[in-house]
Image 1 (tube, rainbow, N blue to C red):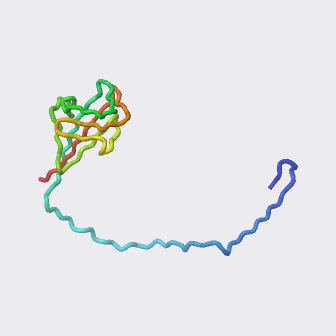
Image 2: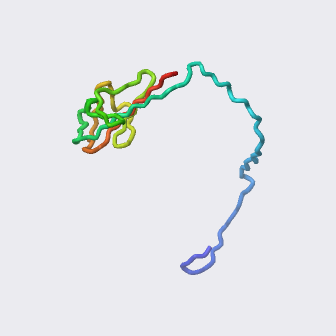
Image 3: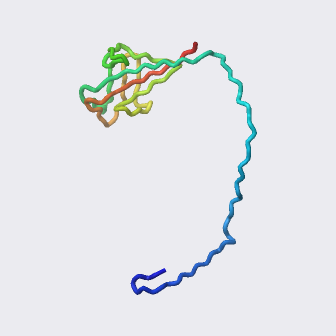
Length: 141
């Protein structure tokens, strides 16, 4: 090592204690025997998913200080048609809520056939923000 202040070479004490090192054993690749996959069991037939999406763009700021309820009639479907109620698949389905394209936590909203209720929070959904409800259901053939 060089000390740049007086340009002298400084020697360091370097003692290597190799006896105290742990050496991992080598890993050897081996061929894993082939295992047959489990048999396919089809007791209920084909599962058919159904997806309904509902869209709303906030026409004014929505203050969530005391929560807010949005009527289903404010929303439209994938085809651009106004809706009067949300299709909810219970118990064979679930609902996702997206605000400004971000999926929201399940505990901050409640969806009924006629409305979306957002829990109280110290925030605001601003005018022009898209709100999307995605309702998925499953049935059998």
